[in-house]
Length: 490
Image 1 (tube, helix red, strand yellow):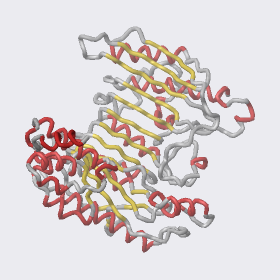
Image 2 (cartoon, helix red, strand yellow):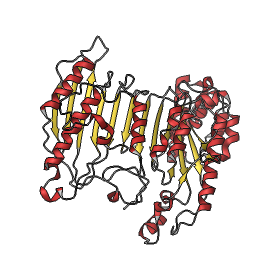
Image 3 (cartoon, helix red, strand yellow):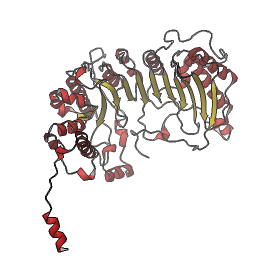
Image 4 (cartoon, one colour):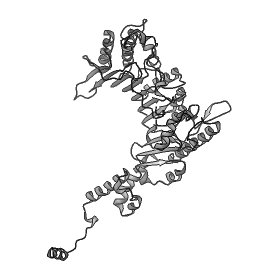
């Protein structure tokens, strides 16, 4: 043992030089360190990453890329946004527009927002939005990555139910005095003022560096839909928006006239602030809604975007309007177009509608054991499929249409999907398929099949429509609660 130790001590000492490694290997090691730091890995939790950027240019490049990939913008960080250099602007993939509202008594929360609370919150909300938009308005399009970055709006207070510690969350949940998200039921955040005549006025500067905009749906408060729409209207190069709207949704549509023509994809979600998902109305998740205004706005969107997704925002019968099959027009397709002012929809390629549950008289449950077997239920779903075919005929470049019922309570689950593949590609034969998926037996009317066959022939040039009808047996009769983070857990 002693001789072995002596031999080891006589060996020449070697030193490891990190710079002697190949460039690719050095960058890989640095990126591994930075990615572990970004994911808060335990091995690097005590290592401050930013100082390591001063090692050399390679370390600076990799660490800055991770540090500035996602940045937060709030009222206290406006000067930081203004000081961003050109290189750092190029690194931004996502910016979180964070509105931090004042705290309030929450152990337990026993009162709704007062008028003074609303004024204070609205001032913080407005000041933050205007300040961040003003800072971003000084950024040029060529200073950021091609296509722009993602801008996500988050609104929160440290006192909110979904921000509590586990212990406080459990205490508030068990307290019969705590009103939870009901605190915000009679108020909403806004960024506009009102003139002497009661008209909205607002001056948000234009921004040219945002390619995708979203409003965090995990917000217990309601943001005025008009304010959300006005924020979108000021993003002049945005291509896609993902928005959750609730209360007075019709106000959303007027500012939409000023939206940028660059928008290609719109995803609208109707939110509700009711405390229990079982108390939600069958027909719509949204509250205080003028469906006429909503439908007009949706049809306007269908004239301008390529992809449109609607969740819990429309009543399907009301939405289809004159396209709805009735005794006066039972034929598969209409001879004249009843939507003369808003169609055909040449730009639209994808339409995805999750409509609200079937509204039915409670007496129907007494007539049959299974609501899905009720003649009125079956007839209503048949008319949905036929009405959608009439709508599809007005969308010449349609590639995908999915119309599905929001599963809730005893109405079962039902969906329709029409898909066209290979259109415009000479190397792939064009095919069209139609699929119904239900939790019950469903056999479409013959006139419905004829209507969809006519859609495939006229719009896609396909004479052989592939039809598939499937049944999903694994289904809870009482449905699944909708995923609404804004609701208080029950």
